[in-house]
Image (cartoon, rainbow, N blue to C red; front, side, top):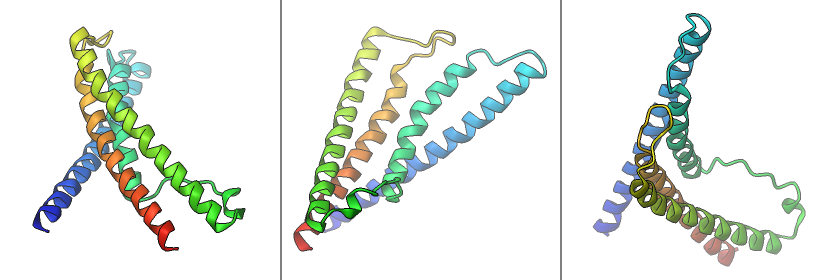
Length: 165
């Protein structure tokens, strides 16, 4: 019992860390964009590699935002058609889409893991600032790993709820 609560506490810690990282990166991205635009149009001195930095920050922010939305169960759903189906068919559709989503993000997680090794082996860098690319796959891997776990929990809840109701 204590091991499970320790795991859940660690899991929540990582989720909150991703939330803070995502919010911090978003703030930095906005700050960098404002400075770049002001520098470009007011002083005719844009930030070299500003666009590259924003791209790298997006690679961190987007997965963190997806994890946060899944944790809060706040993804947008459009169920105009599905809500008209019988309850049994709605449950089947929910189970199938939930399972496909878990599989999809598990594959993204696996490919992110493979990409780290590939980018490291090839020593690829950004074109302007020559920043190594592989470190930016690590938060991607962590975020998508956490997202996959959250989606798996959601899938299990969907399956068990359909057995009850």
